[in-house]
Figure (cartoon, rainbow, N blue to C red):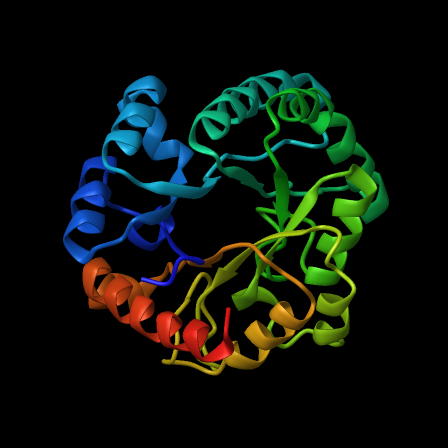
Amino acid sequence: MHPRLSVSAVSSLRWSFDEDLACWAEVGVDHVGVSFRKLEEVGLDVATERVRAAGLRVSNIVELGWWDLAVPATWPLQQGRLTDAVAVASELGACLVLTTGPALGLEWDAAAARFAEALTPVRAAADVHGVPITVEHTGAMRLDLSFVTTFADGVDLARQTGIGVCMEMNSCFAERGLHATIGASADVLGHVQVSDFVVGSLSTPDRAVPGDGDVPIARILDSLLVAGYRGTFELEMVGPRIEEEGYARAITRGIAVLDELLVRSGA
């Protein structure tokens, strides 16, 4: 497995923490992105120790929930949860990958200001612990998760809030000016999620194993490397195609494809 490749626990979305650990050991995965939801189900201290005992490198923590940006009175609960996640990330050497939550009736700039305000105590904790925070953009159909629906807007929000951005390749591969945006994003680009997409699907999420769809993965990888990106490329797949194939087989095939692409690219 290429040292810059990791496998997200989202790729086995319905499995438990124990099932993830068993699969990773069987498949030979030693670099992972962990789900905070799954860690919480086991207990944060216990799960953290078990990740260490398994000898896993951790690239990031996901499934962190999101804000109700329109109702500041609800923010403390999420702020506390994310502060707990910062502590775990510090122990595991990982970054956080956040989504913003929906804007609801807020205009984009107003939502960005609310997000920055809500994030303030979490950023302060992250700065103390040296934990990078990144914000992930979604596709336009997932306004329930985020008001940031392009990679370009993710870069802008990251700069506005003083954090990093996570590129979710499945959501931006057809974006106008993508390669120019990548080229100008080196100051904030902190994490990259990789999967494929079969054009014609009207479902979301409906990610595919790399190589099974229409995303120009190799070309985007090349742009990222030329731009100076030095971080992780994470296999993160979710949706009916992955459920039907089965997590272990889909993960194994995805690793093989991305291993070859990363070696070929000189990553």
